[in-house]
Image (cartoon, rainbow over all chains, first blue to last red; front, side, top):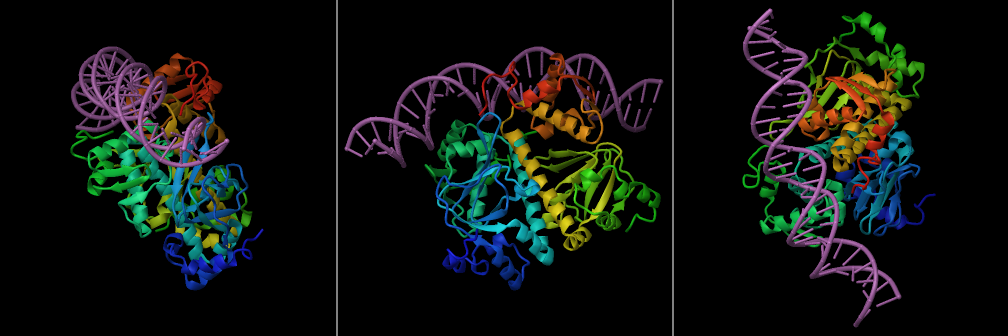
Length: 252
Length: 252
DNA sequence: TAAATGACTTGATCCTTGTCATGTTTTTCA
DNA sequence: TGAAAAACATGACAAGGATCAAGTCATTTA
């Protein structure tokens, strides 16, 4: 089932070599010829709409996916029917890495808004990476980076207070938007308060109260999904738990 | 700096093909010849003693390490001087995967007791994996599995109560000991209460109280580091938050 | 356009778990 | 071997954040 014919114009438009996301998606080290070969196995499908699933837990795994526009939430159902949000993914980010282990998707991925993705058939990527040491190296680094990011999240959830969590969350988006050439201090969040809370291990009410409090303290301006960060340095202080005003004792 | 000559007897004794851990360490799919080639790049060093570091955060990365006996704690220092425990590792488990991303160790690893490891020079492993598709495949799966495991931990820290965390912790060891041919219900924990608490995002006192409570309720018998799990089914109930007695309302 | 539904906010209260304090036991090491 | 230092246990108390309840605002749908 190939989409290449159907969306050939799309293919040209978003070919890897012209893609503005290439520095994120192929972070360094591939020669133009390598990019060409990689490009040849990538499929671009029609965009997903808000609420559409890219895949669901239990689906057979065959492709990694790179978000090219929009945003995606990954989550797993947990025992008691609820869900655990695992991450929010922006253009240039790769999802599905956790599915390699057993050829099955262990989590679900859903579009938070209109979203386009590139699909990278994994078995072909694997074959190609055998032939291209630089691609293989890239893949190892990419997987390793994912591990490192999850580790950071562990620290966040294990030890940080509610406000440290929300500040970290906001600055993560700030940095990621900045990397992509957007404003680091004025952006829209595509997920609900409920999803933020779920992701950060907090109740919706706590998230809501924190937004209000941060606003009252002049740290940010928030209007529904529209966030403007007004005092980045202070937010960074909060993240490190060294904010002078609100906490003077160190955490364990 | 090779250790092969010095510890040649050790080499013979623990050669991969004879190693009882091979099913864990090389989970399937390698031919005997492949194992032979892999074996040829692996170094075995002298054992580490309790408190010795295998590596520290910031060290240059060159080798993955497989624990062959003993146990290891990985941790990162966090902002305020304390540490965040990232994991406890048993024989057959691989550590250092997070260091591939930038050729530096981002965390530290310390022996919790007398511990032996195999070192696998990563650049050689990488070259070898280019030549051996099955090894490459194995590596991808391994990295992916690590991601999956961290994801589970995220759910634990994000949503679970103190007792669910400790029960999960105990059952994780139960299962891992069982896999290694030891009793799943009678074992020694090599780490302190403090380290358990740090890992689970709980205060030492909470861990201590929970051990006492679990014992009072007949779930286990504990004497310092010696733990005997007396009611595995009930512990599994607790993990799933479905234990009928202690909690009847579902968690968010 | 109105009604209904869902998202968000805010307040009051409760509970789990962290913090502090103290005592006991074990381990370490001079 | 004995003293010092960890490790562990337990009680009292406090606080951060969850839960419950109610109301406002936005968005969807009839």
